[in-house]
Amino acid sequence: QVQLVESGGGSVQAGGSLKLSCAASERTFTKYTIHWFRQASEKERELVARISPDGARTYAADFIKGREAISRDYANMAYLEINNLNPQDAAVYYCAAGSWETPTYWGQGTQVTVSS
Image (cartoon, rainbow, N blue to C red; front, side, top):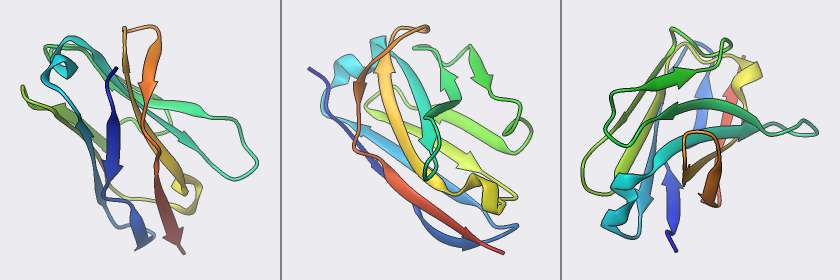
């Protein structure tokens, strides 16, 4: 069982940036794809980005593409940086670990608020 803890959320003004972190409880984290999802109030959870175990393959949703940087180290950390934030980016952001297709382990989420 992998336990994940997100951090780095907060309140920023539109146009600002945030770097979210995802810390895993164990080094077997390195064999999993790391997914970042978000869920805004009264909306469905949606995939933001993901990165393969070796970091060679990444995916970013169209709404974030070009404004994001997803990365991971080879210990127990993964990161999602979002630039040029807008109010539509406000949501709870979750990291999850699993296969490329299916996240299995989830964190509790970190809140991102964007003021215009």
